[in-house]
Image (cartoon, rainbow, N blue to C red):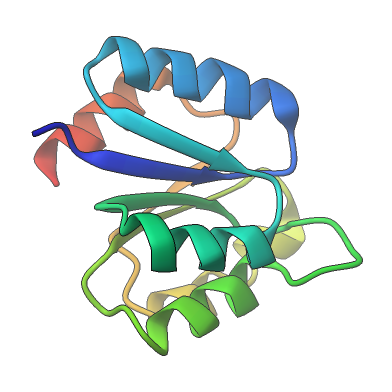
Length: 120
């Protein structure tokens, strides 16, 4: 059975490009732009891996708060954090405390992402 990956990012272009690449690689892909919807998708779809942007738009919750809420009910899902903004990178230590498996700085290569997911 294919691994299920949830992509959480506020940039539609990233959702489109990454989801197509991962689907072509044989993964089942879910996408959302909000932390709130990500939490509901984790509850209902139980993904194996989450690709989570730290800086999600306001109003709404950011990636750190999203992961805190997910960790309240799911400690098994593997989380790869992404950010292209300095404020996102500054929150990396906070994210590490929430048991992320890795960090990818935007822009990241699709081959690096697929390699990382393959190791998980």
